[in-house]
Length: 453
Image (cartoon, rainbow, N blue to C red; front, top):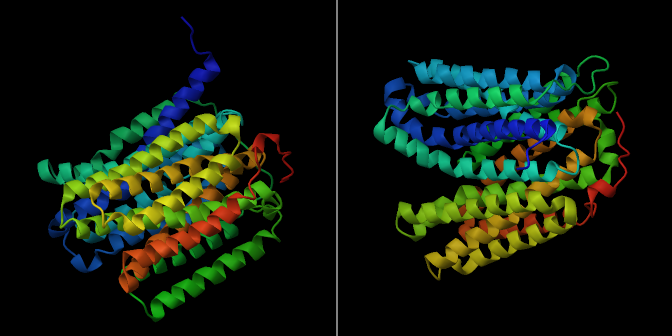
C-alpha cells in the first residue's frame, strides 16, 4: 500500500486547514444576513442595523493590505494564526453581545480578522505547494468558497429556526480551532521579504481607499445616491491614486509596481477585477430575479443558486487539477466564453421555465469555476515566493472591490431597466474580461519570472 511522504502529508494538512478556514469565511459572509432580523429585537438599536455589516466590511478592507504583505515579513503561519484568533475572538464577542453597540464593536474585531481569513489561506497554499502543484490546491480552495457561500443562508435558517441566533457566531469557534491546529501541524514557519521598514502608509492608503469605494458601492446598491456617496467615491479614487504614487517612491512598498511589468500578473489582476464584478453581480441578484419570477418559491431559488454554485465549485476543482498540464490561458478563455453564454442564456431562460434557468445558472457558474483558479495560479507564478503575501493579497483585494462594485452595479441597472439591463452590463464587463485573459501566458510555468523586489 502506497503511503504519502512527509512533505505530501504536511501539504495535505495545510490544505485541510485552509479549506476549513475558507469555509469559516464563506459561511460568515452569508450567514449573518439571515440571522440579523432575528437578532435585532434582542439587541435593539434598529437604526444602527447597516453598521453591523459596514463595520465588518470596512475593518476587513482596511486590514487586508496589512495581513498579506505583513505575512511575508513576520511569518506566514504566525500571521495567519494571529488573524484567525482575531476572527474567533470577534465571533465569540458577537455571540455574547447584549446591545447593538457591543455587537458592532465585535463585528469590527471580527472584520479585522476577516482581512486575514479571506487572504492568507491562499498565501499559505502558494508557499506550501510548488508551482507545478498549486493549481490543484487552489482549485479545491475555490470550490470550498463557493460551497460555503451558498451553505451560509441555509445554515442560518436552520439556526434561527431551531436554536438561538448566537450559535451563528459560536459555530465559528470550533471550525477556527480545527483550522488553526491543522496549519500548525502541517506547516513550518515561512518568512519572505523582510528588508527595511514595513510600509504602513501604503497599507493604510490602500485599505482606506478600498473601504471608501466599498462603502459607496453598498450605499449605491441600496439606492442611496447623493453627496455622501459621491464624496466617498472621490475619496476612494484619490486615496488609491495616492497609494500608487506612494508605492512608486517608497523604498520597501507592500505592492511593488514592478509586479505590473510582468504581463501575466497585470492581465490576471485586471481579469480578476472584471470577472468577479460579473460573477458576484449576477449571483447577488439571481435570488431576487428567481424569487420574483416564480412567486416567492424558496425551493426554486435554492435550486437556481445551488446550480450556480455547483457549476462554479465543480469546474474550479477540475480546472485546478488540469491547469498545470494545459496551461492557464486555455481554461480562462473557455471559462469567460462559457460565462458569457450563461449570461446570454439568462436573457430568455425565465420565459421558458425552471429547467432553462437552472441550466443558465449552471453554465454561468461553470465559467467562473474554469476561470478563477487559473488566474490565481498566474499571479502566484509571476512573483518570487518572498513576495507571495503581497501578490496574493493584491489579487484578493481587487477581487473584493470588483465584487462589491458588481453587486451594486447590477442592482442599480436592474432597478432602472430590469433584469435584462443588468445582464447586458455584465455581458459588456465580461467582454472586457475576455480581452484581458487573451493576454495571459499560455503556461505560466514556462514564463521566466522577471519581477524583482
